[in-house]
Image (cartoon, rainbow over all chains, first blue to last red; front, side):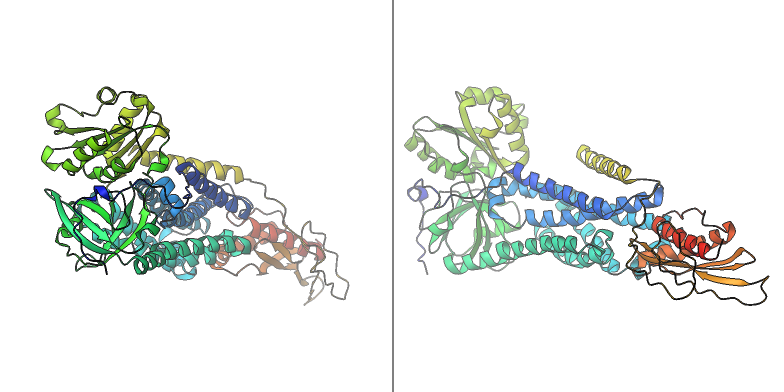
Length: 461
Length: 161
């Protein structure tokens, strides 16, 4: 049990240090290549499992239905794997990009599932010289496990609809989050019809073994990284809230202490998924960045009240137990390639950059932080940042004001080049809402910064 | 929105591309293990000369009535298809095929059952009308049709037609 010692000045806590062991990274291109190879493998499976396609509507529809079905079955595995918190992918691709891929791929997969169902029903109906309605009946009643698969498909369509942007604004984050658990049920329900009815699997035992192994592996990864590992970490580190400090209107910092924190291997710029075991909070975990370099005696997060969860953090009592999943995030010192570094923060995106601003090794004059924020009073860490800038002889720029008042986005290629001499020779870390990071990335490219020197993390929700 | 259209167009083109490479109107020959099922029954039976059928001449000729109007029932050889074996039985009277029926055909899963529930009657009807094995495949049941035709040919050969 750690005593709650107020940790008002975390500046002393952070010493730049290398991670304990070299972390394996799987970059976005490598991951996409693996996913693409899997798509080719499913096509090959269909190719060798199909002696020929007869000319004519029926066989064309049926085979289009088979291919979309195989793709859908594969897509579900990929979608779950992207969210399995596999450490190399979390580090190499970044949780924000993974979430975007997952959202995009999810919509696509739901489209594939719907297409598969419609094409197979229509194709079978044409071949059997019957109508779509009676064919649907035959499929549901006579074909093994198709009824279960149909329920699964409807569940997935429901999850897809709940995730659609428009619906998500009307749904609470927590509701949406829990609806997502139905995907596990849907995948389980839909699994057996692939082998019972799938032309590519019925007579092909090796294909069934490979396909089944793929599903089992991803299921094991989910169980291990999302359930077993957090539970083990919780037992090992015994994290508790040490203190809660208000930083700015609607922004609080939470200090968290525990045992053996060095073993976590956390770095500045990373985040954990936090689960606070307090009433109304315990059932959901949310990603928050470390807002100070992780030290042996404490981790600090800083949270802006965006949703119900982040607002409730202000009321946390010291001593509350915390379960942390992580560390995650690719926005660390390891991706840096150049001597000079610029950090560009948008809004609450300051948190990981605030930690990097403190811990990135840099000579006087090599480090610049640009902090874009709507109004001066919303700027968090103002005093800390000024202190750090003067200690480290780093440049610090607050860019305040709303776009409407400023007559356009203030962070243009021209203004950035002017503010950061030799910008093209910098590594640039960008963190903020997705619209902001996309705009800044565009401007940086226009200003001559190479894409490989731009390190972005954005957050939505 | 542009992304959605791109995804749909790409997927549809990929499907059309794939399927068009697999589409052939002349199907590959039916796989036929020639010796495995050959168990000749005693008795003088005409050798099956069907192109692809596995030779298991189990021709059970039965005759009834006078010689002129003798109705002969002949069983064709088993034809192996990728979905399973097919065997056709025909009745010949006065040199004319009066009945044809596949009494064995793939029926293991609902898809086979569904396809063959319309393909087999259609093929039976075609065989009676044509009186020969020169019949069209039933669309959507290429392999069943091929097997049917080859077993039918073998039955016709045995019936001496």
